[in-house]
Image 1 (cartoon, helix red, strand yellow):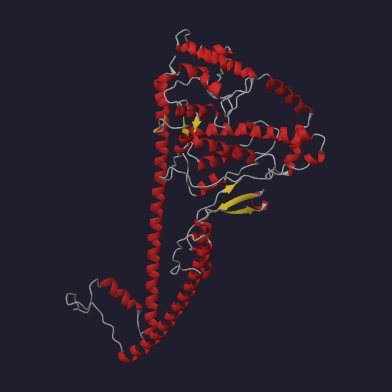
Image 2 (cartoon, helix red, strand yellow):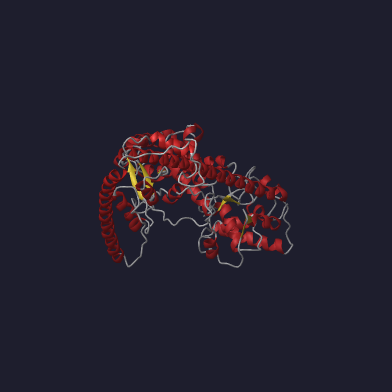
Length: 536
């Protein structure tokens, strides 16, 4: 058996992060920050998760706007894994919540197995998760497996809380629950009918009997055994954490007590066995460890106290070099993902630079044509072709002594009655210049009025000073300039998202979409904006 102490050092370092020493659990939790694939920042954007208040007794259903906002900002948190390949950390917890939202809202309520669900729906779930998080190599299988479980749990929740208690209340069963607005009535009616059938009642009774046989129920949240082990490694440095310790801690409440008498009795036995092992009175060997002694032999192919997906062979017989190589493979897959992201960003930057260069050339050529057109109107008998030919053939200054003016290669422009014509044109140009100056003065006065109004608004908002951009040179209507100022003075300081509801006719169901203040500024400035992400 490979001891827990031997593998602890390799497991405590997750993607280069070493657990700090000598801190409380609260400080530990606050010190860990998510890593992002497309940003150098390690702290996530400030955003609060909104929670529905449709139900008085429950917290309702969250649409995970924090994840949606990060997708709009193209920030992808990196999901971390422990030495056994199980997800840990804040990014993993948020990803699991987001998978639950996707599974409950995008997979229809049908009386089928997960294997019978259309592949395109599963692909949509995977693509949505992959856009929001860096899952790592081979993560698609685990994401869809989690989605399958959460879909089944969602249907079980609907059955236990919204159907069975109201079996004799047809009015209650006629409409879907208000907190789940995405459920269509036709699907709800079919789902209720399937849950009230005799076949389902028989299956439900069998599962209820199996559930009653479970004696030692854990009190873990979505973090699971992997998250619990990660937490204990940080708060109990230098202490060997085996599966008996995890099993016991998973059944304690937040105060460290075990309410269930049966579980408390087994926990006491585990403490005694651990003491005997430390004193050398009892010897553990392979699968015959403290937890097996306390609870009895394991079921074939299963293992208690470590979470789903880990077999006895993996836990007891996996040698240390392979555990270390798993971390190395995980790091390598993340490194490859980061390189791909960097290449994409660089390629897009080059493409944008080429587009900008081509557009600049077009603008210069258009300005030149406009200039030649004005010369044609101002100067009689002026041939633009002569000026084009002269510019292309004579790179030197024709007025310079060093430039060649012999052989008729350089043609001169002769003007008749030059002084008179130039005088008339000069007067016209002066009038136009005066007119333009007046327009600029008027525009400047309007902007000064806007600035005075903004200063008054700043004094009303608790004396907060907000720097507003200079939009005087923006080539856009004044209404769009005012919109930009509103975004900077009102939306940006409060870190607001603009939320819109898209009609059912667009996507076949109502969807909420979120728009960043930065997108509004880009739109008002006639710049290209990114595609928004639909929240389910």
